Amino acid sequence: MKLRLHQVQLPLEFEFTISRGSMSTQRSLIVELEHDGQRGFGESTENTYYGHSLDSMSTSIHRCRDIIESFEPGHPNQLWEQLRLPLKDDSFALSAIDLAAYDLTGKLRGQRTHELLGLQWSDVPDSSYTIGIDSIETMIAKLQTKPAWKIYKIKLGTERDVEIIRALRESTSAVLRVDANCGWTVDETVANSHELKSLGVEFIEQPLPADAPPEQHQRVFADSALPIIADENCLVESDVQKCVGRFHGVNVKLCKCGGLTPAVRMLNQARELGMKTMVGCMVESTVGISGAAQLLPLLDYADLDGAVLLSRDVATGVTVSNGEIRLSDEYGSGFTFCPEAELVL
Image (cartoon, rainbow, N blue to C red):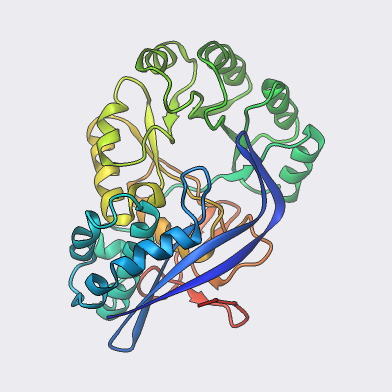
């Protein structure tokens, strides 16, 4: 099997701001695996918060080149198991390889990735559209550029959070979800939850810092008027059990847990423990979104608008149209690169 790495620049339609910072361009690493004339691709984006750059991910992957290139394609989870320990400190790199392996295997076998995962495409949830922090007027304007979406996820973590939701509620009757990205205290979360419930908000994602003491998460879990969904507190498989009694659901992101292989286990475990399931994304291209979308049959909620946030994509494939997610006709994860895509070796 042949390994290649590509770097891409993904420009955003609007500057994107959360409680930790802003961006207008996302840098992303695309892993290519080739075998018997077929090529599979996976993606992980650069992320300073988690300490993963294009250089660091590339270094990690090159260190495992011999393992990857000597692998005889079987089931993708077999390659994941071989790379789990060598890449234990670089889940972003591991995720990109895992996604590429599923895409390649699907093409070799004439199957779609969700079929390789043992899933049937039925009763899948719609995705939300994310609106980053900005002035209230600008946030309303962003919502109005996508007026037909049924669900919006609103980034919060300001001194005027309830005011923002009140203004947005006057502009739409759609479902609203909020994500504080670790930006609230316990008292803020509990107080805000009652205000936000009266405004028709569905749930709150990750209000407290990930390192907040367990008793603070437990208090929010007990006293919040709205369900609380874990993000930064649910990175890897061992975190799912820890979320019981602290969160009502978990948001699994492939780059954080290490790919589709562990994500399926995390989602199944969460369901068995009575928690709601969600898969989220970074700002990423259709390459990554098409892979993550294969998990939709396991989900209660989806936040897979990463490619919709771009002003220019590098691929076409799984589509997210006004929140409705549709597969393409291609095998694997179901995407093809745009002719004008600039993949830098």
